[in-house]
Length: 393
Ligand code: SF4
Ligand code: SF4
Image 1: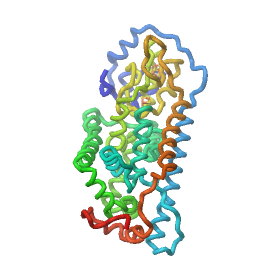
Image 2: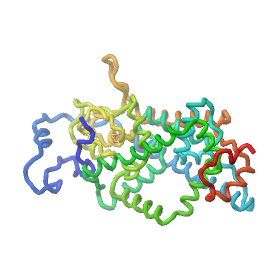
Image 3: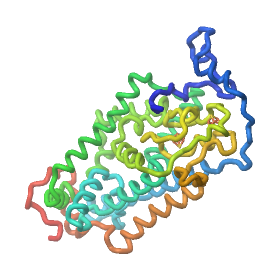
Image 4: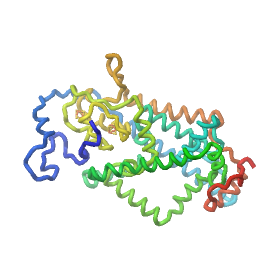
């Protein structure tokens, strides 16, 4: 079934009682075909889950730890920039290369450079390793980067939860607005992929070695430090919209999420619903932050699924929903427990980052002298002029 054919589950009333038409605000006593079909279905026995669900506690722990790591990295990076801006007046701290996680386009460029040349890039290699780690996590565990690790996703979730507390519900855009708007993130992704694909490996290396490329991270920091009025208005609109609509930025505008979502389409791991165990209570669909009609599908293939496991946490029936692999050779479907998913995500992230660090490939090969020259004038850096700058000087 097409996952886009659902209504907006977040708008549904308490699914203990199936919503009547008046609850949707139509003000008519006639019953919907879905309700009539449910009436015809024989009532199933509910097998309560034996153990309370722990998936959301584990996921939230990941979210907060990763947010804290990002705050720490941001603070250390700011101090590092200040050291060069004050010409050594403020104390020196080392540059945290993890800040390159905020340079996804540099990561994409370096990934292409690595694929074509077979060499690990000299400038912003951490951006590439982090892209690889998040891509691997999304391939194996759906788009789990977005709901388990991404600090923007975490803040976005805090905003819609605050909105739900304030207004006792979240809102959903009408389908004719929602569907085309969801295409925006793919258009943005298409533009960036086209731009990177049209560059040669030598062109990418040249770009990265330019002053603009070397201090792309400092420019990104300065963008937020000296926010222009247009950017501030856009940011305010995104924050306000996120209070009303779940994951507004992620759902409509994030090209990184779009890339990871397309990667997740190839994932063997998915949410599966057992029709035999399901009691059609619709709690899963109501809980799904991606507004997927989980209660109507056998498996969730959508690129919007972030592997957040909220649907499983909300499901009252034992064995009705599970994250698992397709059944093979008539055997029972292998199930993945939340703790196993957590171990897998942590192992992939720490494994790839750990490899880059221990093999000496994590940090940019730029000398302090070059940073001393470039960081104070970061905002003056122009797009690269070939041959103008060599970072090894
Ligand atoms: S609630 Fe379930 S279906 Fe919805 S995004 Fe999370 S894991 Fe995917
Ligand atoms: S799968 Fe969804 S509809 Fe079925 S019992 Fe679980 S929460 Fe209810």
